[in-house]
Image (cartoon, rainbow, N blue to C red):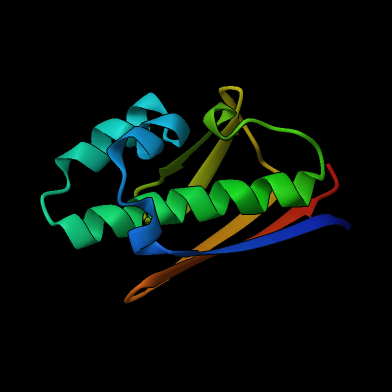
Length: 112
């Protein structure tokens, strides 16, 4: 498969310490998971991961996409699965990594 786009984004986790902002970019399912996380640091890390991943996805596509139209869920092994407008994206590879105060995401968009 040929690579047709890449994207990366890094976020300082505490930058997202704003519930109204988080509500704007998390899907309903992502937000429901987020509010169940009791540890504030872990919750911010989760939100930062979703934000960084969505920004990286938009960069890989190189077109205007709303953050709220992207949903990321994890499979049973923890691998992130991406949905765009509720349609599973099979030609996209996503990695999200966390380190103390920062979260980074990297995306490779492959030709169908």
